[in-house]
Length: 371
Image (cartoon, rainbow, N blue to C red; front, side, top):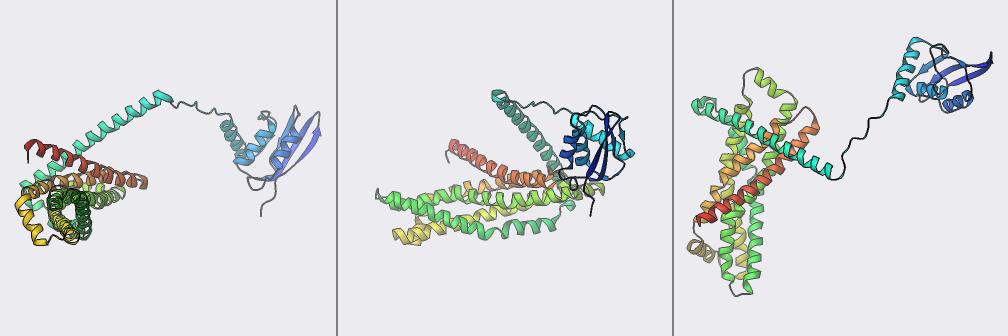
């Protein structure tokens, strides 16, 4: 256990002699620093003997400097070299000026944030172009030499991103189809046109909800997974090790995930279509008393296969966007966990935003084509 900080004060030749003893540390000082300052107040000259101290830390050094109130010199202090060095460092720190507050305020701060946001957007776009260049190069190399295609990870990732996601996709689209059927039944019954609920369900599920729900679920499920997996490898320097031994990470990591989603999203979209129609059939049968055979016959006669192929045409584009965003965010992860969490979050947010934007572009395109 340490010795409490203490001091003795003696009058000497018109001045004072101060001798410190014990542990002048944060734990050992208690109120010794305040008492020392009070005792030395008003003294024009004094001698300070620190050789009797057992230990001294920055807290003790600061208490001694504060008690001396700028009257410490090399001639009136007697101490060990390490104690003198500590007093010097703490003294320099106490005299350092705080940096001025250069924060912007008001309109200037708003313009600064807008400018930084635009710069970050341009930098992000430039990084995306670099990523796409690497990816296209890897695709070209595999097209020239198909032996470079890694079939084992493609099949494994297709199972993980596709077959394992099938239950949640089917369940979600089933209830989406049921909700659309309920809304259609309630609204159209007021006009005596409840039979048109079949067309409402068919068009909405075949054209929009099947691919939209599938893509959003995979954005939250697969894009985040891809970003986390590749980001963890980036943090552990496994990607650097792959490059050192001559393995292209875009061929080994990005391309298999790209191919896996290209294979599985059309399949999941088809499953989502069947599940959404099943939800609509159940509600129409129970609420409107329209039989499943009537539902399917009306679907064949008045909805047709065009809307189905319109929905399916969006699937490859959604697959490429989700895979590219997830893998690119994973490649941008730094060496800390905070960067990993930020990039995983960005992968999900960017993927969902891109899905909504692409769906809107497809809607405008098909509207111009009148299909």
